[in-house]
Image (cartoon, rainbow, N blue to C red; front, side, top):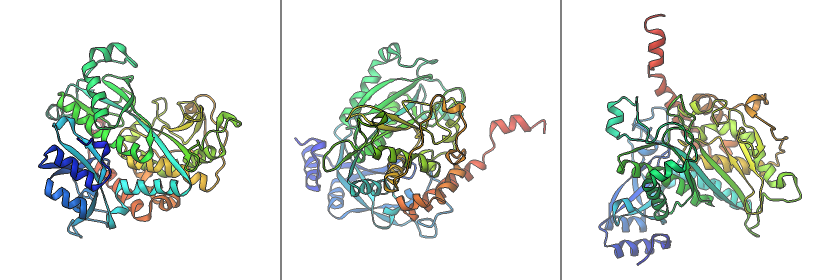
Length: 457
């Protein structure tokens, strides 16, 4: 019997479906917010789609996380009638779905006109740029997520208040917690192995019911797929265990936010040697790594909307809560936005700490990798690293990160570098989608406003 990770071609995909005797398979694409949208497809339709492609309603690129239609984009909308857009199935993306018995999952991405704004296609243009520059990029993402003893119905009945975390209080790196809940931890580990997003480490973080998972390093293309699948199916696994998982950047004012940190490195394609490691230089940083980090630092304020994509993302970006407020860098310093990890040929890398758990992995990786390549391309020079607590220091005005989603969207729209890296169509469409999100938020009257103004003002 063929294994899923042996599937490389359309013929392989057909063979594994036949061997399993499946009448249907599951096919999915990722939208702008990193949410997987898809459907079951009959075997005959799937086989035809492998050969000829198929079409998916382009509304998934024209609505928000609440299925509300953008009113400010030109790609799709009522003016276009929401037509189908061509989609290509990726046979090599084949995954077991152990939570659904013998079922198989295949991922797809938009092509032709929709390719310009498809998150995965946008990301792949950056990957191709790295390869054209002579580099293979490697990445590993790590996510924090909270688990609650709740269901989709109970959280709504409670109005998202007084939710019960799976475990109480702060207890980071707890052996007690992961021993008591060893069954769930083992389910997470097993699911990750079976679906090919293997976990390198898994532990409790500081906060009630919060867990951190570090996904094993891989080529950046595979790393993005694995991160996107991890976020999707951790939520599925949780609900099957009568739990709820959230990747919100910050769900409570009493607790730190949830990160989606990105570890990145480059290797020379010809030699397979690290492009970042140079033992003769300070911190083992090669000139290429210095340029790469300089590019990330310079463009971070312009690309923040691709790392912090929701209104809630900016609740996390405050001093002292383990998230950066300026585009700073240092060596082995978790108070900065960029943390260079000085190590060996195999471990020399940079950690992009702006990324939050709510970000679309394809877009956050596109921004982190693309900005680094920009630095190499323009031979940018890196200033001296921060020493000590970055939160307590004053930094150059141009390093300040946007504090709202609206500001971040304007920065992205005005970024010549972003347009060069990702294309005008993507920048306009994505920035407009973030402006929409901000406008939707402004329609809302918060409890804080009612308590503060209703009687007194």
